[in-house]
Length: 277
Image (tube, rainbow, N blue to C red; front, side):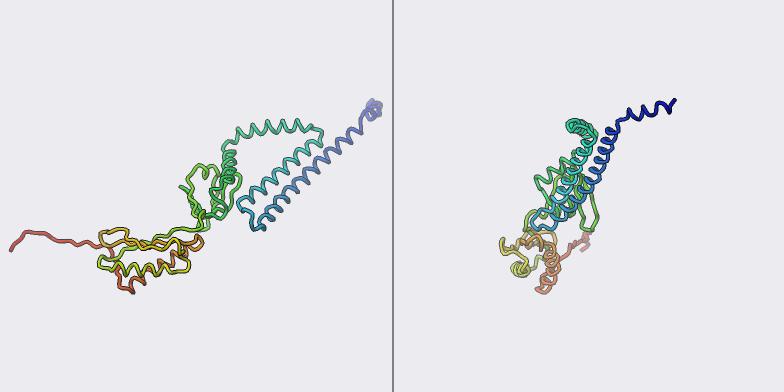
């Protein structure tokens, strides 16, 4: 009996519809495969291209590459679903509802995204800056949508959520091109202040020391065992630390050669007893 109804069943099948559905499925799969490939390649190409552009802000490179990649992926998904016969308006409505649900479930993650956007927009720091917060200190390697990558001075990798940085007080040591340097040292009360001034200002004759503002010699405090004097000068940020260590290394030999003593704390103890005389 099945054999008798088989020809009628085959005749009832709309092979054109099956063929159309097969074509749509194949098209959708191909769109997904090609779209994923293009999104990855486009992100890599954009990152590589922007890195080679000298004037482009390195802070924006990861964000630009990620934005292009995700944008192509979204267009790819919408196009693939459209090839299956699903209306675009329905897709957008579903994505909108899904976005609301995901947003409620991932409030913490979205706060990191919002903080990342604010960091990129207001620019309290950028890639390559030395920053310091209440819990971290180091050089900014990358500002992403979710986290900021910091490399410490001992070359430790730290990934900090953007919301944690946005809500903290950030000290940017690299924002200004010049920095003031104060070097304090104690000299003996018997020392000649004029000679000490001459010696310390001679050290400020280094080519890396800025002529303006002019270097200064200051008497800071009269401490218990020494007169605290200060050499104040200004230098470019790139020269700051190397100059500081060089001057610290040169200061003591220069004072020693001039006969200026650098005292150390001393206490004089007197024993009081009955006067037997």
